[in-house]
Amino acid sequence: MPELPEVETTIRFLRPRIVGRMIKEIWADWPKIIGNISFTELNKKLTGKKFTAIARRGKNILLEINEELTLWIHLKMTGHLLIRPAKIPKNSPLLEKVNQYIHFKFLLDKNEELSFSDLRKFGRVRYLPGPITNNLIAKNFKDLGIEPLAKEFTLPILKQLISKNKQKPLKIFLMDQSIIAGIGNIYASEIAFGARLNPKRKTGDFTQAEIAKLYKSIKKILIKAVDARGTSVSDFRDPEGLPGKYGNIRKVYQRKNQPCPNECGGMIDSFKQGQRTTFWCPKCQK
Image (cartoon, rainbow, N blue to C red):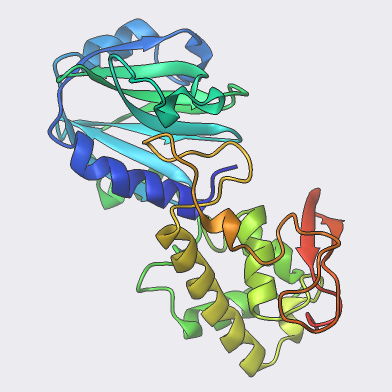
């Protein structure tokens, strides 16, 4: 599933390329992708209008139209957004199979389209009345926790969050969207490894020094992943149809039975935690 770095990669790429662009019409071959309004009604609302802003909250994408309404897009398990010309040139990464599962698109001016490719069809597009404002975000994402890349996410704030969730194992704590928004399975494993902390340990058992290491690892891993344009060990592609590069430098995720990058003499192992697979080094993550 695309996590914070993949969604952030998407909006950073799209912002200068779609804001100000006109929507000629929309197209869909899977009506269920539109969650709370009919295709016909949404098409009427969007035709002839322009994108005026794009934002992210957690793993969610917000597209503002004409400063009057917002589309909320969740990529779910296998979704990603693509900017495609009407005629795709040969040898374009957009022709890769993973980019061919188009089920919804905005037909734009200049003979381009903003397309939603989603192999498993779990992604959703929802209509929200009103522009992107703090009130709209608060109303629709009230269950989401703090943004880990925001300036408001400080070491004292992390300590407060841990003090309220002392019984949660570290990996579960990191993936709880009501505590910290945007971290999923890939980066939770990477963050725990970066801090050299056992993902099974309860957060309430951490020392102040260990919490400081955790805070540093959260920031470092997420920033590095955004800079690498996300992870594409599965279906994610950026809006150009290209894979992210963080998968090339990941330390533990899906690296079971490989030597620990810390050269501690251990081997990367895995176990099930919260119905997801956690990757870690039992020797150096204490």
